[in-house]
Amino acid sequence: MPEIPFYVRVEHCLSYFMSVSNTTYFTNPSTFILMGIPGLEAAHVWISIPFCAMFVLIILGNFTILFIVKKEPSLHEPMYYFLCMLAITDLVLCTSTMPTMLGIFWFNSREINFSACLTQLYFVHSFTAIESGIYVAMGLDRYVAICHPLRHSTILTNHVVAMIGLAVVLRAGILALPYPLLVRQWPYCRSNIIPLTHCEHLAVAKLSCSDIRISSYYGLFVVIFRNGFDVLFISLSYTQILRAIFRLPTKEARLKTFGTCSSHLCLIFAFYFPTIFNSLTTRFGHNLPVHFHVLISNVYLLVPPMLNPIIYGVRTKQIRDSLLHLFLQKGSKVASWSSSSRTQLRAGLAGDKVLGPLP
Image (tube, rainbow, N blue to C red):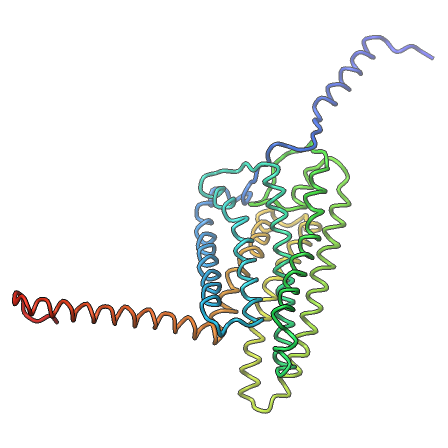
């Protein structure tokens, strides 16, 4: 067997060590770089305008719902308790992503700490699951209210509502907990650039240089199990509701109840369709433009929280009447204060006889 020359062996060893040194394995990178919307960097400032407007509407709308339900004792019922849970969830969900997003659009602040990234992705996935669970609870409330109206107050007591809310939060927290734990344990040797406006589980896991099939399979299991179960339960609830609607005696009552349920179903569809579509395109939509995927991932985080106060708030007669009563009460107080002030000023000026009568 011919002996390999010494210089060939040295050259082979050097090339091997250089290849190893160029591949840096590290468990926890210090920072990630969020790209925002790749391909549309020049339009980030213009894109921020509708996103900022949606953020303002989310804050104002959901805080208004919370204020009205707290202020009006007649709204202390299961439906409005679930609506308050939904408003709090929407506020947490949007405030966990919007500051990062606007920082990228306005100040080109793209860096995010590794721990902050894991915290953000946990909040995104857990509160998305909480919102899905609340939709199920609200569907249950509508089912009991329409199909069993006389037993509504005895079935959905305050204790039962609190237990449902606790179960929704625990389910979401437990299902989302493996996401940051899995991401933290992977070694990273690739780019630390995330082509999104916020941290998501699979987008971060794809930067790992190890086999991430566990992360991918678990994420797919959560999407199928959570969304599949929730959509099935909501479908069963509204099927029974529709059957009860068609049994109502008058056409006016049927149209009124159907109008309320149809608006709720449209909002539920606006939540689940982008959520499932975003999850599937992340795994299988490799031919889709990156900016399209980023926009879809933002739609399911911002559009439902913006529409919830409108659909469940403005279109709900009790909340609309309470809001109108609140504004009228404020206006009457201002008017009465202004009238009394004019009366006092009129009396004082009449005593001094300095000016003529006030208008």
